[in-house]
Amino acid sequence: MPDTTTQRLLRGKVITLDGPAGSGKSTTARLLAKRLEFEYLDTGATYRAVALLAKRMNVSLDDDRQVDEMLGHFSLHFVAGSDRNRVILNDEDVTADIRTGEIDRLVSPVAAHQGIRRFLAAWQRERAAEGSVVLEGRDTGTVVCPNADVKIYLDASLDTRARRRQLDFQRTGQTVSVEEIKNDIIRRDKADTERAHGPLKPADDAIFVDTSGLTIDEQVEKVYQVCLTRLTGTGANR
Image (tube, rainbow, N blue to C red; front, side, top):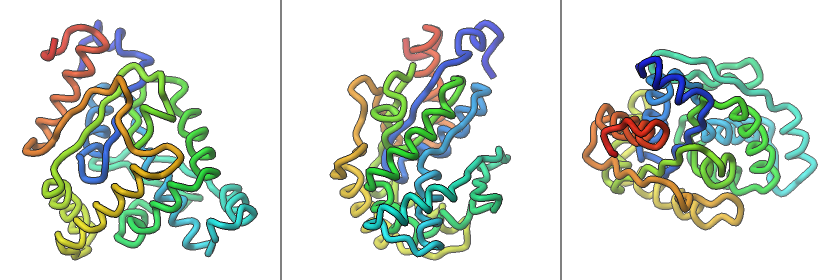
């Protein structure tokens, strides 16, 4: 926990963590926010929630009327938990429902939809406006909060990312092979980096952190020190 002087210097700041699936950004962002006593906003979960809603409502992304009607039924909030934030969609806990292989495959076209991106970026920006927040996703430093105080881009090797995603699936009782996960990651990376609106890429002023070979404690500490250096001049990375 930061000391009183550091807390005062940090108050109201906005930190973004972007990166591809399996780079460790979700866990890192959540633990960083907890350490800084900031709010944590998982923007990827918002797209997953819309993907789940589209599936349940049988929405065609090619039909603007259906998409607009679906977004009119979108109500989302997060509840802080000990190991992860719970995702509440329209008063239903969908934390596990949005972390399946099926949603992994459905979320790319949802994230590429211009109208959905515009709607969710505004939703995310509004919640970040008060500051003292860590946002995590794929375009938080480039589109959602381009004026963030600290921007970090996390990445890792394909093997590392696949192993992490496999552990995520195992925690929810799903059995998925590493090869299948690698193929999904490659497909998702291609879709994320090549989409026309809000493509996955580091912001020009983002700090790159390779998390390959790092434990979660090590990568949280590394990102924490980067933030302290940028925001207070007191971190170990001066």
